[in-house]
Length: 519
View 1 (cartoon, rainbow, N blue to C red):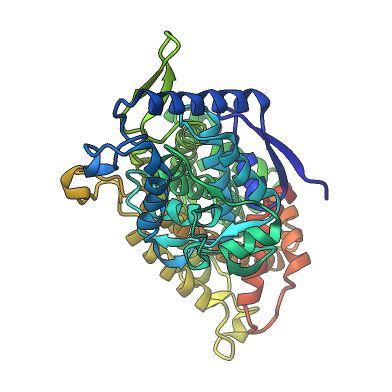
View 2 (view 1 turned 180 degrees about the vertical axis):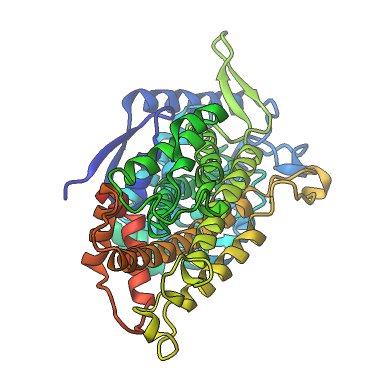
């Protein structure tokens, strides 16, 4: 399959671009106009150095050492020392797609032309992406302020070097999925490692870039998760012969909540033509069915908000200081805090809550379908028939797994952005904790995917068992199509079986968008 061509300019990077690059499906280049801006920014740095006036991050130390001026001769040593001393990340390795997303976002940030880095730094990052060199980055150790320092420094170990060029200081990377030292990976790909110049150490490490990368990829997953949550609700509603009044357009228009209205509209479309709805004689259903639009709708609105924040962040200049044209031919260096990850951390905390609730209400519907006291005459634990109960355990354990993941989500969904500890001798006295929020959002999204796959597994079986009870009935056009797609991958089993592989196949279909596309 030919690769998508992406040209970065610091302003127009999309979430779709990030997903494409993260999965190696794009060829990326630097726009010529952006290259000119970056070259101008790098010339401003050289001008500042020539004038000799102390400017933070260019010819001074960092953090609490900002009052120490550094000579031009020591600029390279200063920037290399920054990378070596800051590469302190630990913990499980980040997935390769997250690292690749972060590399693209960082390159785009530098392409805005306010960072003072050379075009060669951006083009080295892009060469690594295009030639499949992926740094191996531990996932823990970032507070999200001053950006994701530790993981970005680990990345910089691979692409940068010094006069000693020691392999043990080059970090680790994969080249074409083979693990080796950063130095070896770059050599194998034929990409020269850079000796960082003035300001470039800060330019590559300042900014909540890994937090934003996790956020962008979690958002891409969330689109499919929310769509699958609506499909699960519709299939479960039909399997339960639920009351369609809860989806009435007038009801939702009266509430005026756009997410709620959108979920109800989609559920109406999925169940259109159903002769199962309204046949149980119930006036109203349990909340997990009746209030699905009201519970799941806010998640859609949350997703729209988080998308706006992340799209801004990946097209922002986020290091410090930033360089601007002073209007008199000289550069203006402005020191501030654009690296601070609070916007990203707070938005991803919101996304965590939204996805946790989508999973939580899905698990309640799974419980409902399995409980013979509540499921409207379906066999207990969805065994194939009432006579099979006892000899067969049915699908009981799938709900156990879903409940476990929902409980874990409830812990992970606690806000991370409200937690802070000071660093750098108190200079950095309020940190964002954005990377922790991002890691937890990523984890919650994967948990949510499995919980939804469990519901879809159970709802498909329950719908078939219901249709066997009412042979002249038919499901809605959308739910029928989804059921057919599921059965193409996961055949119906009359007795107990190894259920887990089927759930995993449905989860893969869910995350690929295949189920909701079929419906």
